[in-house]
Amino acid sequence: MFLQMDSCPLRLAADIHFCAAQGQDHRKCCITNGVTTTMAGKKCLVFCDQSVQHEIILDLSYLPCFERFDTIKHCFWRSARDSHLVEISKRFRINKWQSNSDHISETNPKQSSLSLNNYP
Image 1 (tube, rainbow, N blue to C red):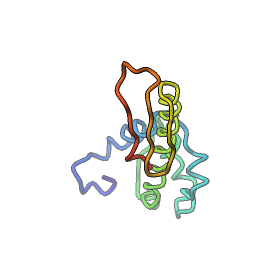
Image 2 (cartoon, rainbow, N blue to C red):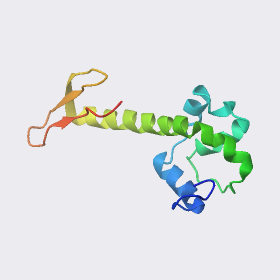
Image 3 (cartoon, rainbow, N blue to C red):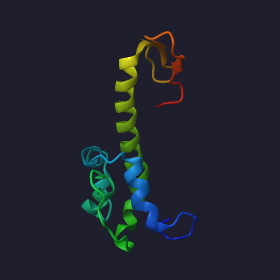
Image 4 (cartoon, one colour):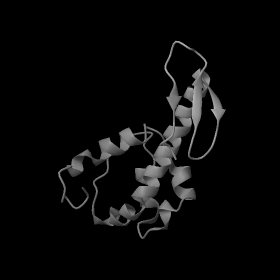
């Protein structure tokens, strides 16, 4: 996308990041996980703070941030997972909690069972 070598247009990058981040500020997670350790430094944090849509014209100075996109996505994922687990725990009772095999039973028997086996 950044080098305009794939089918996803660069102009959609801001919308994609805003959606993935669920409009939240993930700078603390990004800093903790080394997003600012690239040659671009703190410039990369603009991808982590999606609490407001920033008007940014991406140029080559942001290219080092690409090295940390997996970390940025991890921060987005972890925040989304944690917030959804809070919501799920309000509706379901967690019977067993293991890193690879989570089993959640419903507190409301009229709803279907839910298993979170594929979540890290």
